[in-house]
Image (cartoon, rainbow, N blue to C red; front, side):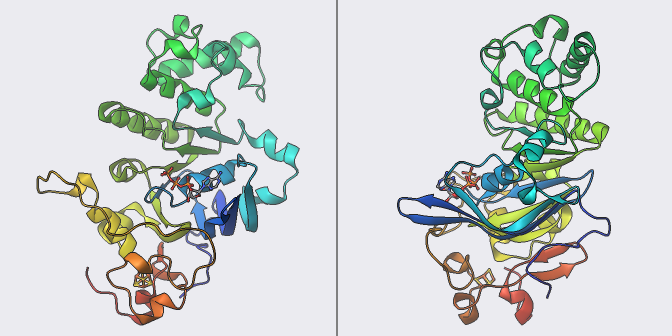
Length: 338
Ligand code: ATP
Ligand code: SF4
């Protein structure tokens, strides 16, 4: 058994270290506990995927790291150490200065990131405001980056407005902008969800190539397990606001331990061998996040639940050097093949 924080999994200090993070949203129906005791490490130079059903808190976690939360969000406790400094304790101005410099983000909807009334050229030059160099140097860097992400004829296309590009090309422009500043950490929130399958594959390959070239870390939020398996080094599985399992990509996909991870993988269309008209889903629904909870958050849907599960919230158990999960079965040594 280890403490409630998913830390110390790699020998070098991670670039991003989230410890015991709790966040509520205030709503007219009460407080929604959207993040509960979240612990997560992003080692330098690695890609960490966050997976889980809709409503599990993936995007909330990504936006919390970026400091881009709505007004009704309340970070109650925990720390977000980035390059050793707690982002929660940083003055607002210092935190803002990190955005578009050490930290950048790609959104699901590229239009959310791009200004519709400014040319791509202007936006790509402006985003380099932290960098030295003349306007011409910055423009040349922008053209080079557009070329790198596969925009045809970037020298003339750079003068266009965002709406002149197709959805896939706009996402490429956003990737170019996010990486132009050579961030230490890129947060990508469902960047391929709005694209068709062929474009998704292209964007995933592009992201991997550029991440390796630049050497940055990536926090990659996705519904798509195949994309995560392709792109990521590590994976965190979230359920109802908790990280329930975390480890190297091969551990999560080849040796899943938490009953929720197993159920999620069983329902992955990419892994289903038999042809079927109806895709399987995990029986039951994600529980309401309003109010306090006793016991394991997955107990109402878990096929392996036993008495203790309804009474105590499990702590985090270490399964391997770099693999942890939050389930009583690990403590009871009752883990059986599902
Ligand atoms: P999806 O895959 O559908 O984007 P997700 O895993 O990213 O889901 P979040 O969007 O982070 O999940 O939402 C986590 C929980 O917080 C959900 O129950 C959601 O309804 C709730 N939530 C998110 N934003 C707000 C908000 N501004 N106010 C109130 N509740 C919110
Ligand atoms: Fe299932 Fe119990 Fe493990 Fe929760 S703690 S995942 S209910 S076996």
